[in-house]
Length: 150
Image (cartoon, rainbow, N blue to C red):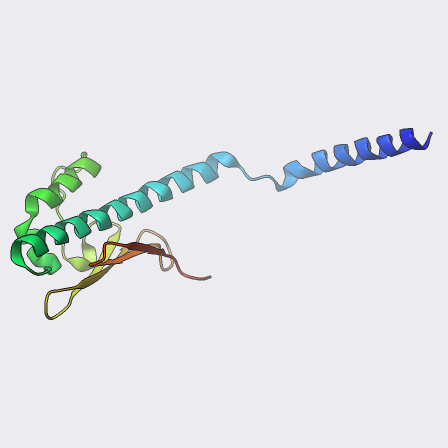
């Protein structure tokens, strides 16, 4: 008899928890849309940082030093525009801008050491309401990701 009561209690508890759960569940359709858009934008951000790092390796190889963003645009327009064409095919006239508005939704801070033997950059997602997601890199080619502490 005790065994049947224990089983009944476990079943009732399971039913109770099963009924209570849906009120705390999240709507997956709205969450998925937001996270897919953010994931795509973050992937673009990382891809652009990798592209800039690769372009800088070309600068070091050809000119013996790393270059500023403006010089990079002048020396390697085909390589950088290939990235634009690949990831923004619908925006035919889109071009890279200065560092503050490198592309819609992105802001770049780019510093080259005085001797040209090093650089550091921060590419930030400006589409997010507060401080935004950012990627950091330097001449090592390593990429660090960051977002503000809340």
